[in-house]
Amino acid sequence: MHRVYLDNNATTPVLPEVFEAMRPYFGEHFGNASSIHHHGQETRAAVESARESVAGLLGCSASEVIFTSGGTESDNLAIAGLVEAGDHVITSGIEHHAVLHAAKNLEQIGCEVTVLPADGRGLVDPNDVKRALRQATKLITVMMANNETGVLQPVEEIGKLAAEAEVLFHTDAVQAAGKVPIDVNRMHCHALSISGHKLHGPQGTGALFLKKGTQLHPLFHGGRHERSRRAGTENVPGIVGLGKAAKLASESFNNGAIERLAAMRDRLQRVVLSCIEGTTVNGDGAPRVPNTANIRFDDIEGESLVIALDLKGLAVSTGAACSSGAIEPSHVLIALGLRPEQARASIRFSLGKQTTEEDIDFAIQLLPETVARLRELSPAYKKQTIST
Image 1 (cartoon, rainbow, N blue to C red):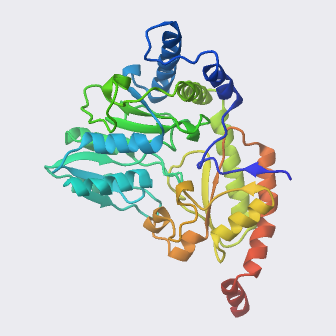
Image 2: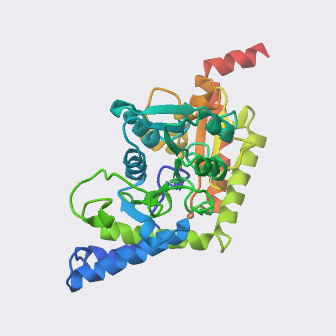
């Protein structure tokens, strides 16, 4: 069966160039990067080269990059590592659960957490951030790009507010890295999280930017790896893969790859809205990353559409991969003001570097017929059709 993958916000395939860069470090270059002999120094050089590539993607110095196991660890390291009991933290209701749950856990150690709303487009208002500031505020954590809608948050404005108030600012940039340019200095951020498998690197890798001079309490205790900020022997193949993926991502901003991605996403969205009635783009009117379209199909169950499309060879999703199978509707879409049945009727289409025009053609061909068939089986849609 011909298969097309449009769920790249869940995970991306490792690019061939990334896999080839990693290959030697599974075999002949096997040394521990902390060893002082030849084998260790060989792998240490590879780790530091990857660090330079990640720093280039983020606009920071290499010494400000901490390698982790992924976005979740990076988020937790930043949030738990930057605050103490008695501190006040500001976040938003549309964050990934890695941030929301980490912030919620802070309450158990005596912190106060303010969760800000988003508007109907999925944007956090910087004025809400400003109003939430207190004397005890230690950290603001607001994501750069939402994983479900792709909406880009006004992180530069929020970062400026944080700087003026002398408050730390962290942003989860997992879904932004490789899709839009990142400059940590323009964002005035002290910490920023990324994940390898969201930008065509390997799963189980990630990084945290930590601004020079920012004090961090480590989550792990052991050796003095990563300048004593993240103990544990480095995952050299994974780090090399992340570095290569970061380098390719940096190049994509100058070779037209991002523009091609946006054009394909826009064509998919335009055709769906014009050919299928009762469809709406969630987050419409807000700036978005170029690869993501979250579309609501009225009078259907989103999971039924995901399954029906998968049986025909098209992979999409109803939202965050870590929430797959959840009974509750998406907390992100509910925060935008959607009713539960509207949130459940929403599908996320997310493209990747491997996506082709033929893939978009395939999706466009399948969707109208599949949606129509599911609506025929929907009691609510039948009732609505009869009444009109």
